[in-house]
Image (cartoon, rainbow, N blue to C red; front, side, top):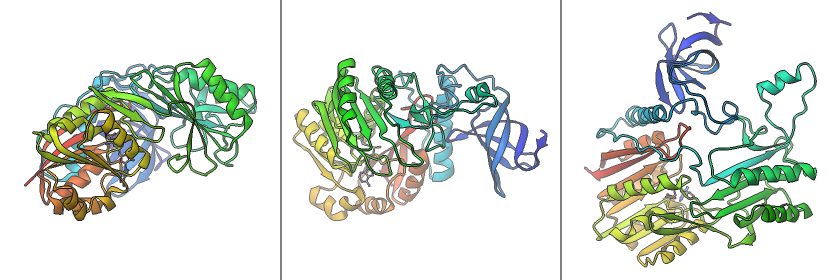
Amino acid sequence: MARKNKKTVVSAIRLERYAAEGKSIAHLEDGKTLFVEGAVPGDVVEVMIMKNKKSYAEGRAMKIVTPSEDRVIPFCNHFGVCGGCKWQMLPYDKQLEYKQIQVTDQLTRIGHVALPPIETIVGSDLQREYRNKLEFTFSELSYLTREEIEAAGDGEIKRKPALGFHAPGMFDKVVDIQTCYLQAEPTNKIKNLLRKIALENNLPFYDHRKQEGWLRNVIIRVATSGEVMVNLIVKEDRPELKMMLDILLKEVPEITSLHYTINPKMNDTIYDLKVVTYHGKGYIEEYLEDFRFKISPKSFFQTNTKQGEKLYQITRDFAGLTGKEVVYDLYCGTGSIGIFLSKGAKKIIGIEAVPDAIEDAKLNASWNGLEHCQFYAGDVSDIATDAFFEEHGRPDVIITDPPRAGMHEKLIQTLLRIKAPRVVYVSCNPATQARDLALLDEMYKVVRLQPVDMFPHTHHIENVALLELK
Ligand SMILES: C[S@@+](CC[C@H](N)C(=O)[O-])C[C@H]1O[C@@H](n2cnc3c(N)ncnc32)[C@H](O)[C@@H]1O
């Protein structure tokens, strides 16, 4: 291995094995572990060292000197510049193998708790068009590919406006996406039509640096029921808004619920904004087994519907219900896990921060003819107190499905006091799950672990853990 530019670039180093979070491991000449992103095990790469600590270093692959034998040709034209599907160069079975390693590695290294054997990861039947929700961003500045820069030579490069996904690590530049394979049609049709209308009418795309412009984002949901929801997000109300929405309705009759949101704020979140229904019923419907769910524009719903069903079947199996149990569904979203488990429970109590999702959860319970489900809106750490559990019934089973940050420590302390016989922990981030399992170790042993792949071509991984009182 030769080094050039002394400290910052390693000219050829072989990546030995997969680590986690999309990073692979190599060893520097002095034996130090190097974590490399942007490449896969087996690649020989040139690496720019980004961080050099006493015991380890981190770097980014700048050039592939010799590709890994595992590599396959990515199917998407935008691969390499779009941050969406970073693992398309790996066959799906390798992706699954690396995800299994990631779960094992993170639970072992971060958790340091006794673990049962980890079950083989459940792969996704659909590896394309598996998402039911995508958000595209408008930007005044398109991301320029290497080919575009080379083609321009010494001439000035004029950046065009773009509608697509942020280039990795760039808040202001967006990769102009023509075809995305993550979601079924009419997603590409809608996105490309919006771009066409905007360009033909000289409508200003958002400038993320100056916080100027008009068109900001579009969120498209395509349910397996066939229903399609579109939410166009703009900076202010203008007459062109109606024009754009009317063209969408005329050209894309598949749209069943059309919305717009005025967002004059600095950030992109719409949770604190009013989403206006322009046409249609204001929500879409999704089915998991025979259960019917309402999804409003602000509600969370498992993004891969088919895998969501498998995830819930595993959760139901781990919960081991007999019909007599009081079950708490923490971070319940639209109540989907609780409702999915409801037939085996005496009572279901769900808690969720987004009030619209709780409204959906209540309606979902009534749509499915369930009278033993209750839902409460608010921060779960504040609502799920000792007194709340006393009032609503001591839990036999607690299901917890927190966001990537994991559970708040205050909630973990409450769970340690409440001592439910079983906890089923559904996690979209095994690193924070491992941290939480270590905190729960005082009272709970981990008895089952089942990873599930919800997001093919990414390094994201879901993991379900069953905990029982020691
Ligand atoms: C991973 S989702 C799970 C949702 C649901 N269990 C499902 O399967 O669709 C996490 C949910 O936690 C909610 N959430 C995030 N922080 C929260 C908090 N502090 N208190 C209550 N809910 C929260 C989010 O709004 C989101 O609906």
